[in-house]
Length: 308
DNA sequence: GTACAGGCAGTAT
DNA sequence: ATACTGCCTGTA
Image (cartoon, rainbow, N blue to C red; front, side, top):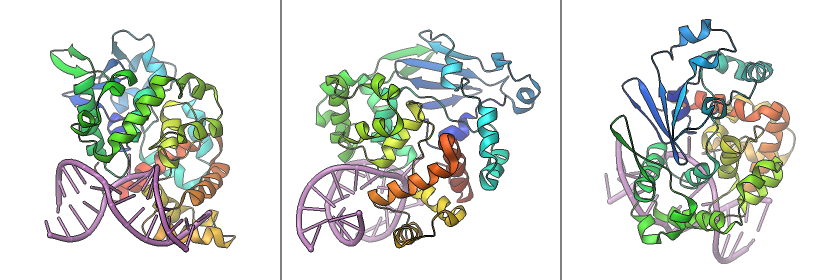
């Protein structure tokens, strides 16, 4: 079992509040702060350990969170089987070899919803800044190894904030959306435990009722925190990747020709086109489409020379 | 100064 | 269902 590569996961935009100090990674998981030491996290070492030796993946949590590595690193997924099933596709197969350690992490749903609501029309470093500001302002301070960390704020505390306070976190026009998410969760309209049990389509529909959550953001939340591994978020980058590698998936009618046209000219597609494209891709990759998405996403950005 | 960045909602057609 | 538009903020 090759351990997850934090660097890649952060660059692939699924984990925003992780930071590395020397050889140790620290991350925010809801009201927990996580810590991962890397001396034993070395590819060669990990590759020669036996597959069920999860002791190499020791993750610490403050306060305690039993077996957090199993939960957060998704050790309950049979990654080996998932990746080998996706390897039937030649393009994905190459990226799996190229980026060993790229994984999907399981995020705290509540934090994940806020994170991606902040993600619209901006970049990863900006998202990190917004979330850090929100945490510093509304989360709880924790001292770990002599460093200051802030837990992710509860929906209630975000809901108590004024739009002005949210604006001061650099959210801009997203402040309104963040507020509406906080309201939905705090009032119980949006029930995370229910979403976890719902099937993909139902949960997606529920999420998209919230102001500020569209197709792409809903799919990110479903994939990264609600165990819907068939979710395949499509943004401009994935759009370009599909155009480059899976042009052949769309060939039949005028509708699909229009999608191609849009993918070529900037990558923006309409909500209806998103539905068509998403359906075609998920039919092709199957129930673990989300894993394929992460590899394709990382690769297209990597080949474009993107750092963040 | 200008363009642009990992979407979304509102409006008109 | 699509086309078009505006949107906060920071960086190049």
